[in-house]
Length: 163
Image (cartoon, rainbow, N blue to C red):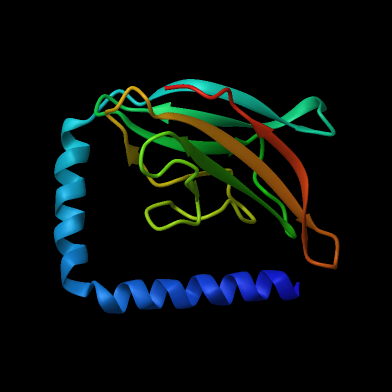
């Protein structure tokens, strides 16, 4: 629980700092994103993997690597049913190649829509534009449960690394 509290307080402070430093530019960024989104279409799942506990069926959800027509990539996780109390899930986008090789973004990263929490089924990471053919991506899905001592990972799966 202490780790979760530190994580949440750090995320909150980072969010406050980002808002305070970029109040005016954020508006311009939103406009640019909206214009880009309007011209990008065709979100296609290019790789997926089931969410299994102990690598055994049944599947509790799916993690997907997604790309649109503008070569923006993101990861999504969709759980089979709504997440219950004391559970959560998150998707991670891992970049290989390019100047940001090794970068990992989650649903909790700026531009994502937040981890899957009680009553929800899905989340997505921020979108990353990658026109270079040398850049590849993989999506990782993780499911967590809090048994009283903080959140522990109970399942994980990864898609194949692809472009």
